[in-house]
Image (cartoon, rainbow, N blue to C red; front, top):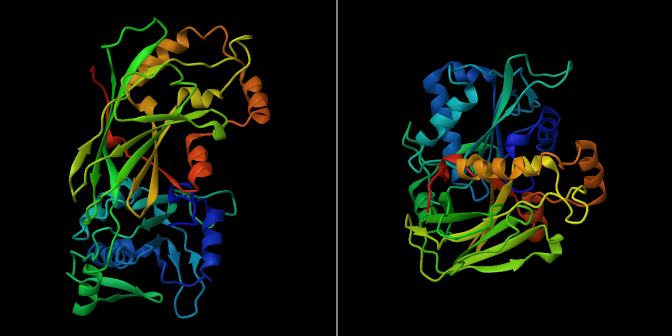
Length: 386
């Protein structure tokens, strides 16, 4: 939800702030369940499915917090110690992530689960326990129905109520915006281009899909590329417009692909390959000692994606490209030649304080003012040769 931190980053103090913001009561955007609710398996599945349906049918979604008691009948909401993090063998967070998509007829795969662990001696969360926050975004294919009791729900004030037939029809005919998302990313070594020893051609392919029930007439994808990794010549970028982001201190360039076709619901669209040269520039050319980028960004490089579709708000994503074995091998090979000149960490820290180094999510936030989500690594094609 807008105006909230990503649930994966919530800590106990921030949770207390959210509870205060809600007046320590349930609201139309937040619901609490005490830790004991998970002990009754079928009852818990019904309550969870009910919340997924109600918030999924709300235009702004909402939060379900597990491990907080009260919040109704005038009783202030408070952390109750939390759920065991190992309630299930695979871990409670992983278990929730597995069952949530299966509890509604329109799969709630975009829900995110945050795990808040105890923090400090005065923590209200017990050892080996956690409070779990489920962020439920509005479902683009609403109305959403619980598969447990076959009911459609909506949020009425601080409660989840069943929808009647006319309300369901109203939601079905409600105008929605298209929702273009990333279905798959392929990052391959491209051996089709002759390059120097310290240059590595990489082919980036992106496959998009329309996950809404509305046709997208005009859509586009922007790719934010860090200059220190892809600062070399770009090869074969037919179908892409490439510009430098001077307003971002030339730390990122943006390549844009505009789709000239309509994207129908559930239709996958493969964009033209973006062929790049990976050639790391870690230090100042003259001195070869002044660091241009912190080492944590060197070892864990990220690229950003921004998707536009008609009048829908833009959505933004980031991907750690070192998770691809192709990129990981390239990074290791390039870094070998820098072993003797890499700056010390304290020097990097001093430089970072002087210079303004932008992470890709900061660059996108400054450019567009929108939140950036991490891409599920299952969408990444791990290896290959073009």
